[in-house]
Image (tube, rainbow, N blue to C red):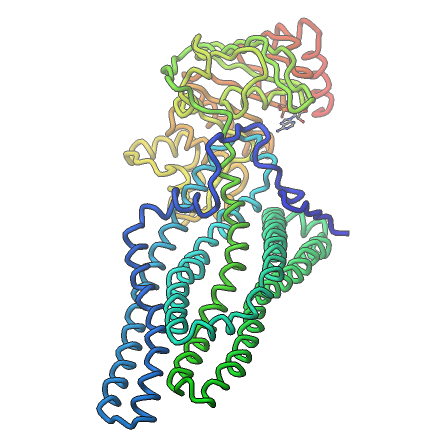
Length: 601
Ligand code: ADP
C-alpha cells in the first residue's frame, strides 16, 4: 500500500506546514497577483507598458478587420466600385502586417520579463531556503524543496504567456469587436449575447475544480520528487536490500495517481472554452434567425450583416483564450501560493542586530537545556573546553554529544542556559563570524560533484604554496599522486570517486585552509579502517596544533591523550578529568573503557 495521504488545501504528508518554529510575517497579505507585481513585475513596468501598447494595437486590428467587411461587401461586391477594391485590399494587408509586427514585439518583451522574473524568484528562493533553520530542514525533505524551486516558480511563465497576453491583447480585441457590433446594431448585439448568463455558474464550478486538481497535482509532483531524491541518494542500499521493486511500486503508485489528476485538471481547463463554444453557438444561431429576417426584409445591408458576423466569428478565439486564462490563472495561483508559503517562513536563528566580535578563549556551557518537542536532549549541561586544549566528549550513543556541536555552531539554540566563547554569549556574536570560528570534520565529509581542487578551495583564492602545505598536512598529497589528473580529478557525486579516508583528508585540507581557531571533530575516524585511521589521525593531529579542539569519539583509544575527557550520559556531564584520573576513579568512564577493551580484545 502506498502511503501518500494528501490533505486538501494543505501541505502533503511529507511537507510540514511552513511555520512551525519560525515566525510568521505580519505584512499585509496581497493577492497572488499583487504579490507578484510588488516583488517581481514592478521593476519591469516600462517593458510591460510597451508590451501592453503593442498588444492593444494587435488586439484592435481584429475590430478593424471586421469593420472592413462592410465596405468590402457594400462598396466593392454589391455596388461594384473598383476604386474601393484597392483601398479595402490595402487596408486589410496593412491590418495583417501591423498584427505580425506587434505580435512578435510583445512576445519578445514578455518572454524577457518572464525569464527575468523566474530567474529572480528561483535565486531568491534558494538563498532564502538556505537561511532557514536546521530543524525546519529536518522536517522538509530536499525533494519537496527542489520541486518548489524548480517547477512551482515556472508558474510565472504561464502567467506571462497566457494571462498577461490574454488580458492585454484579447480584451482589447473584444472591446474593439464589441464597438463594431454595437455600431452596427445594439439589438443584434443583445441577441448575440443571449447565451452568456448560462456561462456563469458552470464557469465558477470549473474554476474550483481546476484549483483543486492543480493543488493535488503540485502535491503529487512534490511527493514524486521526494521519492526520487531518496531513491537516487540511497541507490546502493536499495540494490543491496533488493528494494528496486518496492521502490518502483511506490513511485508507480504516485505516478499513476498523478496521471489521473493531470487528466482531470486538463479536462477542467478545457471545460471553460467549451462552455464559450456553446454560448457562441447559441449567439450565432439567434443572430442568424433574428438578423437574417431584417436583411430579407431589406432593413439592413448584406455588408452590415457580414461585418457583424465577422466580428462575432473573430471574437470567438479571444473569448476562448480568455476562458483558458481563468484556468491557467487558477493553477498558477496554486503554484505561486506554494512559493510564497516558503518565503513566509522566517528563520528563528538569526544574527544579532548589533553583533559583537568573536573573541578567542574558553568555550563554556552553563546549565544548558534543550528539548526537541517534548523530548529533552540536554538536561542542564555544564562544561568548559579550555582554549588551546583538546577536550573529548565521550558517552553512549544518544547522550547528546553531537547536540553540543550543533548548539555551539548555532544550528540550534538552547531552550535555556548560556553558551559563551571567550566570555561572550554566542548569540551576541554575528552568525557568520561565529560559524567562522569553527572547522568541523565529521564522519561523512560533504564533497561536491566537482574537481578536488574546487572541493578543497570552495571558491576561495589561495596562494599555491599555502595550498601545497595544506595538501601535505592533510596527507592528501599521499594519494593525489595516484590520480592522473591530480587536483583536477572529479570527486564524483557526493565524493563517490574517493574512499572514506580520502574524503576525510580532503575535509581536513579544507579545515587547514580555513584556519579557524576552534576545531570540532565528530567521530572523524570512526568509519575508517585501521590503516586509513592512522593517516587521518596524523592529519588531524597536525590540524589540532595550536587550536582549541573538541572531539567526539566512540573509540576511547583515540582520546587517551586529550587534556580533558568529559563523560556524558542522558544529556548531562557525569564525569570529567584526564584519562588516567577517570580510570583511577573507577566510574562510568572506567566501565566504558573496560567494555571496549574487552570487545577489541
Ligand atoms: P550523540 O551524538 O551523543 O549520539 P545526539 O546529540 O546526536 O547524541 O542526540 C541526542 C538525542 O537527541 C538523541 O536521542 C536524538 O534522538 C535526539 N535528536 C537529535 N537531533 C534531533 C532532532 N533534529 N529532532 C529530534 N530529536 C533529535
